[in-house]
Image 1 (cartoon, one colour):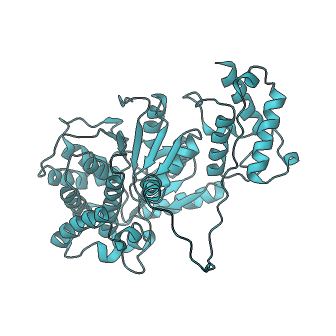
Image 2: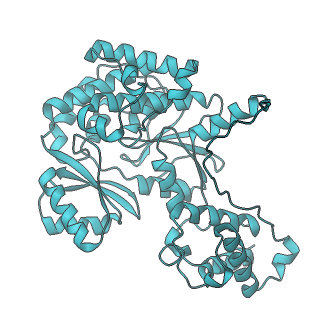
Image 3: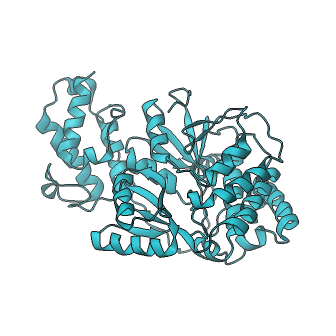
Amino acid sequence: MTTSIGLKARVGLFPGQGGYRQGALAKERKAGEPVVREVFGAIDEISLQRRGTAVSPIIFAAEPPTLATLGAEDHDTLQLAILGVSVAHHRLLAGDQPDLLLGHSLGEISALVCGGAWSIEDGASIVCDRNDVLRTHAPRYHGMIALACPAQRAEHLVSLISDDDLVLAVDNSPGQCVLSGPVKLLDAVHDIAGKLGLKATRVHTAYGFHNPALATAGRHFGGKVAGYSRHPLSTPVFSPILGRRYHDNDDLAALLGAHLTNTVHLGAALAGLWAEGVREFVEVGEGGILANLVRTTYPFAVAVSAAECWGQKVREAEPAPVPPSIATPEVVPVVTPLPPVERVTTSELRSVSRPEVVVSIQELFANALEYPVEVLGEEAELEAELGVDSIRKADLLIAVRRKFNIGAPPTEYQSSDYDSIGKIADFVLDRVGSR
């Protein structure tokens, strides 16, 4: 799986079905942000032409609908909103856009628009075509369910049910995959998963995507897309369904039609990028699902949201506010950042022993987690025994890397390799010794 980009490249991740959050970009639109108004103005125009309903009055209402509500009641608005939010975030990055774009399911349309294949207007119209075709040709009472397990285990579960309509639709990571099929079969999956102690979550969607049952819908959708002129890509776009970058001579219509039936291999795509040395990812959308996936699977990666990037630029450009003469009490959410890390010098690293590394990591974790050092035994499992969630664990591993001045782990590693302080200490000593 090759991407042919440099080691310093940053990859933009475009979310699919879960890439909507209530109130997304509402503050920016209310403040008159030109990019948000321009993007959603274009989408509203297409939506009015195609559906007789604009998107903005719905998602920018005083009390906008939730993802669950749109997924159940207004699939068309949901899909157009996801497209608009991603395109707006990409444009707000203004000069700091990613070097390679990767779309997840529906997010491939957003990525292709931002990569230059189509205008925002054509992208919105293509999303409308997709919804029209699904409404007419998709089987009824189908859906999707996410499982917190590797794809191989999910496929064993599928074999227990033994029905060809139930398939692996998405392989996101060693810790998450998605099945697609009739609702009655998903109910059976949910029951079996519960008995096995396996977390199962219904996906907010009206259709069972990435399933052979959508073959007819896919052919009709491809025929619709064939009517649009496409342009050469100005930024490369990688497809985790195809397992490669798009080429300018690709038949996008046929490929997008086939996407409705083919499996999304996000985990393999990320593994290929990681093997090439890519370490920076930015989620171009809302929700943080893909960024969290990257951080969980690759704790040493830098994975942030687009809003963190362009929002930081805005904050840096704004003058410091003048404090009021009388302070107004307000409730401020408490954020617990990691404490500053005191780096180990190069000379100290040459003679550092394993017990010293273990003690240093224990003290770092105790300070960050506000735990007594005594409970942080080197064999204690961080997540299972100490209750350290995957995101906090990723932050701690980055702090360890900084403290000992070491680079990223080998490409074949899994995050589960570093589930205790002792294993992290061994990793540090191995990396220091390999210099």
